[in-house]
Amino acid sequence: MSAQFAQSPGWLDWYRNPSRPRFALPPGTVDAHCHVFGPGGEFPFAPERKYTPGDAGKRQLFALRDHLGVSRNVIVQATCHGADNSAMVDAVQASAGRARGIATVRPDVTDAELRRLDEAGVRGVRFNFLKRLVSAAPRDELVTIAKKIAPLGWHVVLYFESADLADLATFFGTLPTPLVVDHLGRPDVTKPVGGSEFGRFLQFVHDNDVWVKVSCPERLSVTGPPALDGEQHAYRDAVPFGRAVVEQFGDRVLWGTDWPHPNLTGHMPDDGLLVDYLPQVAVTPEQQHKLLVTNPMRLYWPGEDA
Ligand code: 0GY
Image 1 (cartoon, rainbow, N blue to C red):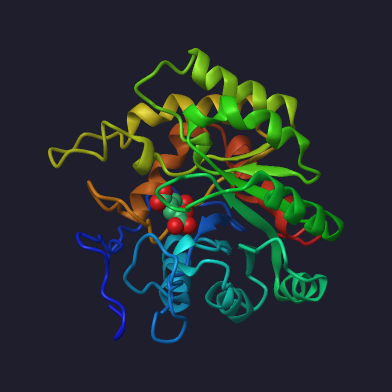
Image 2: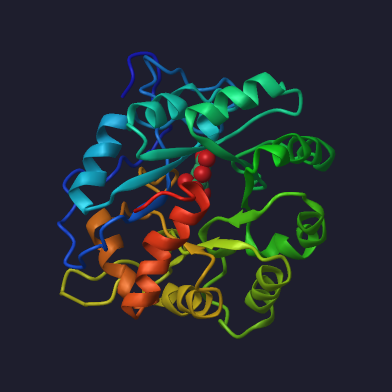
């Protein structure tokens, strides 16, 4: 906990001793969705935040990276830091080229500030539509931001709930940048994978050449992690959704841990188990290599060898 910030009541901190994954990640694996929180004493949380996390800084993130066998990170600005990207940028700059960043900016951001972020390693901005995380997402402001970042070759990361896609899809289709969707578009995994809601998502991905993060089974799952009695398959109800996206859009899928897993209430996942979950959704070595290495390298480190 930070000296001056008390965590939100009931806040769950990340899993302290993650297991060593049995699944060996391919060399060059990118964790394309993770965050840093503070530390609040150095990088204060934003006044407009909807939650106050425990500290989870770059040192802990890089330790997890090394423990899991990950090579690189994409650090996504968390809403608890608002549009002050200092903690994220500090982590990216401390990574010696092994991290990229996704920022939050306001419509009045200057070109000079965008250039500074770009030089620091930022490659996109995130638009968040979850009402429990942001008070508003005015579309005119988002269009202004998207137009400003497009010349840099950045993309927009979209975070929304599947039920809201019907209202948002047309707007998303007008944005002038590549689009990346968080957490499989947050499907309701109690509904059929072949049903209309997930079908709409797949159509949206197809029609707009969208990139999709096959992440957060722990956030989507109702069946949860393996039971203590040794049940083998973690988050099994999320598997068909991830697998469908990997099979249909294998060249545009990404994966991330979502460490340090903000706002979970039921349980905190063992990050080693999240790695062991991967072969359930990316079944073949070729699918795994695209998901974990080829695709994120193409988006975040184009032209570089993994
Ligand atoms: C995630 C999910 C969440 C939070 C944030 O920026 C954030 O605060 O992303 C969430 O609460 O669902 O991607 O980490």
